[in-house]
Length: 267
Image 1 (cartoon, rainbow, N blue to C red):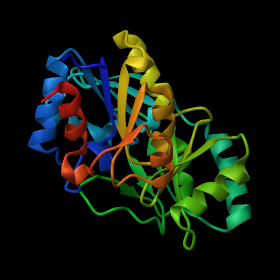
Image 2 (image 1 turned 90 degrees about the horizontal axis):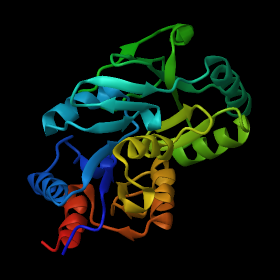
Image 3 (image 1 turned 90 degrees about the vertical axis):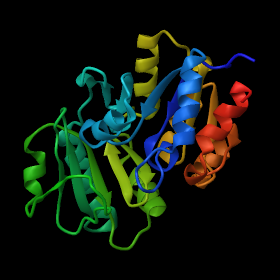
Image 4 (image 1 turned 45 degrees about the vertical axis):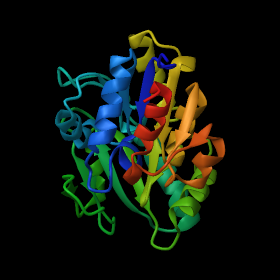
């Protein structure tokens, strides 16, 4: 049995990575088998390059990666940023003011553009525990002094879904708002998504959408599923993603990617 896809697109957090930010040996072997069968593996993540590079290096990953929610196309083998889309800071500031007019003050963070772009965190913003580096800023005005890929927002009372829904309604068509994970609601350039970044990478690889299988767990993966020929949600996925997935596999802790790839490979 030949492998039916030419491209395997995987999200990182909650999908390829386990809770301890490692990739299981079983999943590594399944991806190696898929590539040996003629498919390319591409990581498609909301993380910007500086928060992704160490994981790719650990995997021995040499190919293209779509980072920053589709904003960055990164060549992991040569450690080069091939393309990068930045957020219009004036529009983002206007969007933020509209959100705060509707909801009251929000805590914010921002991801600076570039291979070594820092994540800047303002007062009150809750950073997830872990090894990812960030810089705390007492004055959030400093966040706007250099090009950004995205802005993160949190609300003291609203949960992620409610914040994303209300913020989206408040900003209209100025920017896009996505929920990318627990505590992670992002302001992005209008029209930017994992699908736009993945389609750009696929053109470089001369692969069509119909030849792509995609794995994910959060609402920010919905555009990627809409673009790809087949979308697989993890068991731990958000209900909105499961609703549009072609199938649901086991969780990221239970080798969900490997379960599907092994079946397709006839292993």
